[in-house]
Amino acid sequence: MVQLFLSLALLLTLSGCVQEVKPWEKETLSKETMEPSGGNALARKFEEHIYFSKEASKGGGGVAGGGCGCN
Amino acid sequence: MQLRLSLPAMALIMAANTQAEDYVTFQYLQYQENDNRVSVSAPSVMINKDFGTDFTLNASFVADAVSGASPTYYAADTVSSASATTVDSASGASAYSRGKNIAADRVKYGNVSFFEQRAAGSVMLTSRFANRDELIVSGDFSSEHDFESISGAAEYMHWLTPAKNQSLSLGVSFQSNEIVARCVDEVNCDASSGASQEKQATAVNAQISFMQNINRTSYIKAALFYIADDGYLTDPYLNVVRNNNGVTADVVGEKRPEKRRGYGGTVRYANALTDDLTLQVGYRYYQDDWEVRSHTADTDLFYDLTHSWRFNLGLRGYTQSAASFYNGTSNYFTDELYATSDYRMSDFHAVTYKADVRYAFTKAFSVNLGGNYYDQSTGLKAVSLLTGFRYNF
Image (cartoon, each protein chain N blue to C red):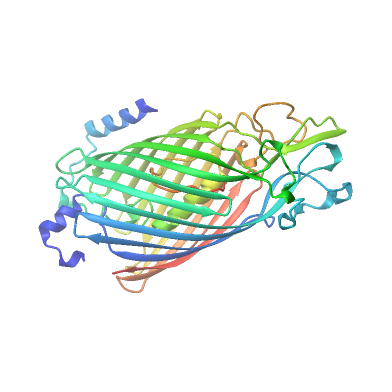
């Protein structure tokens, strides 16, 4: 897993498909729909909470967040 | 606020991908499972406020009202109650009925009803330094009548290049949980006696992530995470059946290890295919020393039909292997140290279908309505509806 992660980082860094984006070219990248939450952070929180309470896996969505007695 | 910023200030903010905004949003969730299992009503509110260009404060609060029933084994009061699948927890004695050396035909599997209210909140402060690196500090709490949780987290994001197209983030959190457990260690297992014990559990979560802007319309983000759970990780309400010889059996509380070490990785790719169409694809791998392994894949498609209308369709697939100490039958466990019949620890897969729409009356005010349908191979099916509004100020 760590090797995959580092390989991906290295591949992207060295890859010709990566272009330098100037600060004034980041309008599209800053759109709400480009955010992991799609612009609705509360909706994403609800989704993650439901999955956490119905499945045995967790993690990967960031370190912040509270617990619940649902699992 | 952005309209009042000078061009250099705008470029400073746009150097990062996300563009902070001042807003307040209210969302109401209604969640319902099949077979009259869990039903949830959850209003929530979130506020996001910038203080200059260097600080952003985000706070949220949610109040859940959860009712319904959880399936588990229980000791029926009499053989004649075999047809009953719902046990009334409010009446006490039969709620989590357990017993040793009971007649085997008193062992039933059904829904045990419950009602729960939960209040949870979160506060997060983002600080940006002169080089635009970010430090995010957050605190969370969650409170139920039988569960209390507080947690704190810190994450540092460092830009790897002057153009700010690569970043590396390192985050860590600590969570402390207090659980009120009834009938632990099979002592005083008559729920009507009110016997309970307070148990503790902690969770440490560490994550490192790497983000790369690929071009002006796409980026990729990958992360590795590690989670260490310690303490009371058993569900105090769930039972298992032990020593079932066909004549007699023991219905006792489940028991899980007091240590769990999980790790995994995620990758997310977002691409604005056109000015109106955005695609997101994500994947997560997870495994732990309970022998749970899972794969999660999700995709979202956002379509801005006009400046006012936005549609979102999503699909999520999930599969997991069973925990090593799981068995769902009533005649498997004998004297194993750990045992659970919780279906959530079983081998299953699930699919979620998602659709929602947002309508913006003005640039400042929008409303949203959406729904999810969750279909788990264990038989669990759930529908959630979410509606709310957002006001940018």
